[in-house]
Length: 195
Image (cartoon, rainbow, N blue to C red; front, side, top):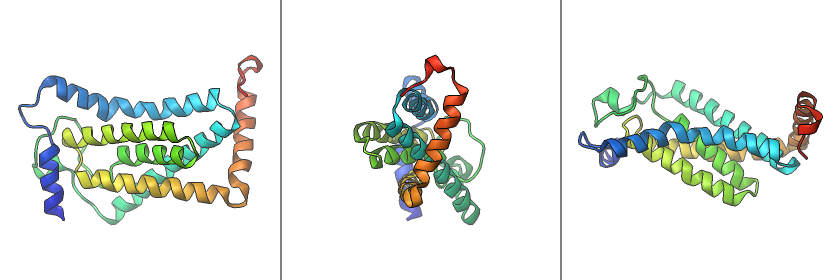
């Protein structure tokens, strides 16, 4: 399995002769595109109604749970990054550390699956496409193996499902959203309040 992971990595990883334009695009996808997550969450919260704010709550908690799961997985099993093994090319400065599962993939996929489970399917599918682009770029640039991405995808899916199920228990989602909306409405001026 590890041999397949390495072979797949080498098939995707940029060669030493990769164009600067392609590498620049990949760096933007690997680092800049992730900013779409907090931006979308902010827009949905500020401009949305209660249903969209509930989605923001579920998506945010899904991302937090996914990143927490990653910490636990890394404590149990360390897998080095490709450049730590001298494998392929590395075009993205990154500290050496555990590569499995990918935090970027976990967070992006958790967001996408949370949106899909919240019935914002079109937005969720767009976020899923963005997650795939970010994931590809991180392998292309040499900081992750393909299985790191697959692990991140599975962690994101599990986290979104777990949060969705857990928050529905005893209407925790409704009670928490009531408190967050109350806090939000106290912090913003009356003229700028959304629905």
